[in-house]
Image (cartoon, rainbow, N blue to C red; front, side):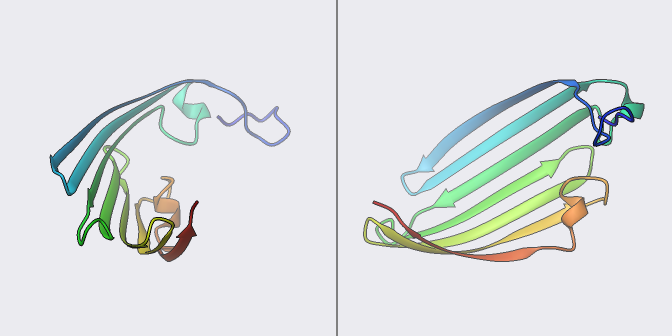
Length: 133
């Protein structure tokens, strides 16, 4: 919310956010999840930077191979009317019960006024090492 009287130029607005999802395991080694996000801001559009209503859908796919030691994943998030997207592929290799290494990417797209589109020219590669106990 743009607010000229606020010290930083932004103000508060009431908002409704919701999500509905469905998870499905087609096989013991395959898991799929889909979600629909709705966000509604209760303020006049002229006072907002982003649209009053936002619709997003996501799809997450994960498989496990080689005795659950190799895990490919794909996460896709798309704005339905704002034309923005994030694609996040990842490959994880587990070593024992406590250590893993992952290689992935964050691929962002959309128009410049959308959250993902603002970073469309800043895709990145991610290397993660994780030790848990």
